[in-house]
Length: 486
Image (tube, rainbow, N blue to C red):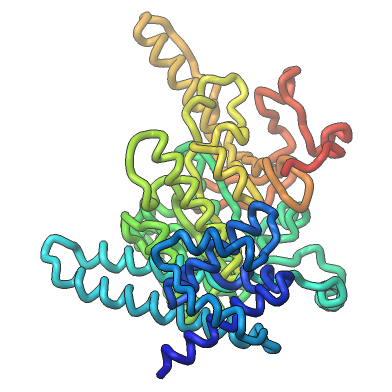
C-alpha cells in the first residue's frame, strides 16, 4: 500500500513537469533519477534531464521516441502519466520521494554491514570506515542549500556588526591566538576556517600550536587535538612546562623544588578540568577524523577548535604512487575544510615543508614549499609559516666546525646560543586580510613562543636584513599595500 502511494506521487511529479516544464529546476535541485522507486519513472526522469541538458524542450511528443525504444517502456503507464493532473504543493511531495529514497539507501547500507560482518577476511575498522564514507556521501548528496535572499543576509550581517560593536570595537572576532599582531591581521581564527601552519622540522610547530591551544582553553573553548606523531603525555609535559615556567628538562626527570611541586599540582588540577581532548593514535584517516569529530561535537557542543598534527601523516581513501598521494592529500585538505564549515569551528592543520628550501640562501618558507601544495594552498583560508633563523645559524656554524676539523684547521664558531631566540610567523595567505611577517620569540627553556620584548629583539638582525634579498614587509609600504593573496 505504501509503495502504491509512492508510485502515485512519483507519477504526479513527472506529470507536473510535463504540464509546467519550469518546475523541472525545483525538482532537479532535490532529486536525481535514482531517487525514483519505479524503474520506468526513473527512466523518464533521466531522459528529461538529458533533454534539459541538451537545451531542448521538455515535450512528451519529443520524449516519447527516446523512451519508447527502451525495454522498460510501458505505454499504458505513460498514457496514465499524461492524464494525471499536476501537483499544487510540489515541495511536499518532493520531500516524500527523497525521504523514501534515503530509507532505501540506508536499508542497502544496513544489508552491506550485515554481509560484511560475516566476512572473516574483512577487518572491523575497514567496515566502519566504509560505512562512515557511505553515510557521509548519502548525507552530502541531499537537498542542496538554496540561495539566500539579500534581505536575510543583510539582517544577519547587521546582527554580526552589532555583536562586534558590543565587544567594544575589538579587532579580535575569532579565537585568540595569543599573539596580538597575528590577531590584528587575521581577527583571530574564525569558525569554518582551515588554517595551515607549515614549518621545517625543529622549528617548533607543535609547541607553537600548543601555545595557541592554551589560549583557546583559557577563553572557555573546548579543543580536539589529533596528535599523530607525539604521545598525549609528551604534549601535556610541554603544556605544563609552558604554564608553570618550569624547564621541560627538569619536568622530565622530576627535579623540582617544593614550591615548584606545589605550583605544578595547582596547574595540573586546573588543566585536568579543561575541555581538552587528545587522540594520539598514530594512524587516522580523514573518514575516521570526520566521524570522531562529529561524535565529539555532538557530545560536547562547546568544542571550539580542532588541531591536526600533522596533515601528511593522515591517510585518505586513494592509495598508490606519488600521483595518487597528491590526490589523497587533496581529499584530506578538502575534507578538513568541509568539516570546518559543517561543525562551524576553525580547523588548524600542521604541515611539513619540502626540504628544497634548505638549498636556498633565504630559507624563509614560501607557499610553493608546502608538500603537495596545490590542494592545500587552494583549500586553506590562512597559511602561516613558522621560522627561526637561529636554527639555521647554529646548523651552519656546526657544519663549518666539522669541515675545519676534517681539514685540521682551527675554527671558532661565531654562533652564540640564546635562551630566548627571535622567531617569525610568516602570514603567507590570508583570505580576508593582509599578508606579512609577524615577529615573536621562542623561549627554549620553557618551550613556548611569546610576544617579543624590546630587550630581546633590539640587537637582533637576521643575516638577510642587511642584504638586498631581504624585504621587511612590515615596514615597507610598497609591500604592505600589495593585493591580498587568495
